[in-house]
Image 1 (cartoon, helix red, strand yellow):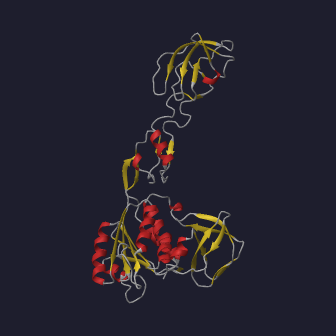
Image 2: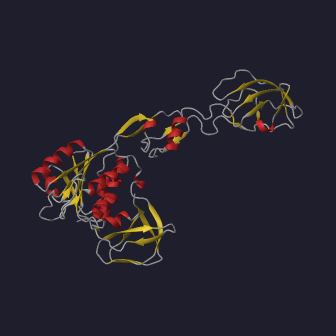
Image 3: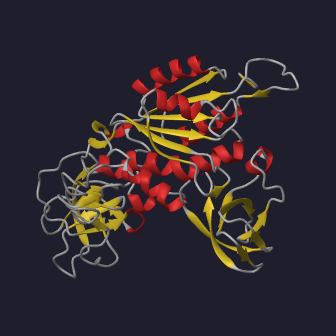
Length: 396
C-alpha cells in the first residue's frame, strides 16, 4: 500500500505524452492545442467603418458640405481616393477608402440635392476601426494547452488558422466483472442482481473529458473469460479501466488476470478512503491500466483522483490544471477523520458557498454521490471545525 501523493506521482510519471494530429479547426471543439498559434494576418486587414453613415476627408474645420461620390458595402472593394470636399456612403464593416479619415453616423447626417450636409465638423478618426486593432499579423492568438471553446474557435478561424495541432483522440476500454452484475437491457432483476451502472458512470465521465471511443464489456467471474477479454482490450486501447474484482475476496480475480496478461503493476492499494484497493499498471508503451473498486462511490472517486489527471495530460491539458478544480467553501459542521488514512467526503455546496456533508459516507451510497457536487479531503486523524474556510474539489 502506498500514499496518495506517491500514487499520483507514479501515474503522472508514466503517462505517455499526447500523440499529435493535425485537424481542421472547425472540428477541434473542446480539444486542447499542442502548440502556440499566431495570426496569419491582421484584423481588421484594413481600416474599417464601425457605423453605417458617411466617410469624409476632414481637412478643413469650416467645410460642412460634401459631394457624395459613391458607396461601399462590407466585402466590396473601392479603388478611388476620396478628396477634400467628397464623401462616400459606408456601412458597418466597410473598408475605409484612401482619403477618408472620419465617419459620421447615419443618424447625424443630412443629404440635400445629392450632397452631404453637416452641422459640425467631426473629429478625425471617429468611428474608424484601425487596421490591426484586434490583432496583428504574427500576434499570438492562443497558447499551447488552451482549450478550444466556441469563442476561441472563432478567434482562430478569424486569424486564418484553419488547421490546428491537437492530441489524437484516446481509445478507452471499460470492462466490469461480477456474476451479480446485469446489462441494462436485461429487464427485471432478481433480488441478488444489480444493473451495470458503474460502466455507464465511467463512460459518461470519459465522454465529459472529450473521449468518444469508449467500449463497454462485462465478464462473469471466470478467470479464463476475464483473461481472454483483457488481452483483446489491452491491444486496441490507450487506457483500460476495470470495475470490480480488485480487492482480496475469493472472486476478486482482476489483479491476477492483469498480471497474467503482461500488465506491469505500478501499485495496488492506496492509503485513502474510499477507493483503497485501486490498481494501476502499464501495458507496453501505450496503455495505462486502472483497476477500480466495484462499489460506485469508490469507483468514481478513484476515477476522479487517479484516472482523470492522466487523461487530461494525454489530452494536452497543462499539468497544473490536470486535476479537479477547487472551490473555496465554509464548513457548516465539524468534519472528523479518525482513521490513519486520507478520507474524501461527499458533500453539496449551496449558493452561499456553504458545505453540507452527506451523513452516510459509505462506498455504496450512489444516491449520496449523485446529490454531491464536491469532495472534501480530510487528512488522517484530523478534525475540521464548523466555520473553517477550506478548498473542496469540484466534481464534474
